[in-house]
Image 1: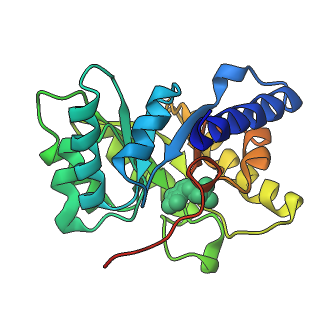
Image 2 (image 1 turned 120 degrees about the vertical axis):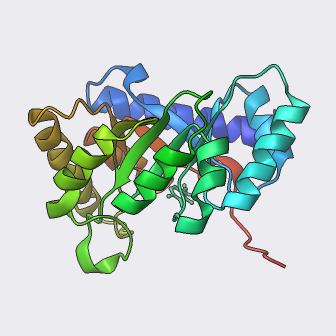
Length: 235
Ligand SMILES: *Cc1c(COP(=O)(O)O)cnc(C)c1O
């Protein structure tokens, strides 16, 4: 077995264990394989091991990879998620080539994505990125402003508001990991109590997946535990 195949199995085992610990159904958590910085061959290997959903952070790298993998495996129905910061001049390729976006944090970006989503495609699935750790992070809408943004996004054509996403400040402290994820979960529950009909909590990465699943993650975004350490080579 290849390393990627073995790693996917190990991550699946970790999800099994965490869902069992949380007494949640196994199929309530989906694995998003974060393939940023890795080439199409790594994605193809993961697809051949049964993985279907992939996450990308950089627009050009992502759309090149979508095209390369589609050319190599034209019969596979894959799902591509954009999980990186969104610049307003880069919304069109995201709207045209991805199935999901996890990092919407401003109304203006949501409006552009709605306008630019091709009519022939299914609505773009959207998560709002929340700045759950406060000052430690620059990205995400403040918790107190999520409800207002959600109300706007829910009305936009060609977008389907699915849920919330966060990247908490990294910590090895399990209780602190849980506390951050619990805060996102509480916001999610509040929005649903107000009628938002969200079904997605995108939280948890290689290092904090167990805490995220215990606190209710429905999508975990895992990169290095599947593909190995990243080498950022922008040359
Ligand atoms: C890179 C990245 C991940 C994956 O991180 P790992 O620690 O490699 O699992 C998940 N989510 C986002 C938003 C990322 O940028």
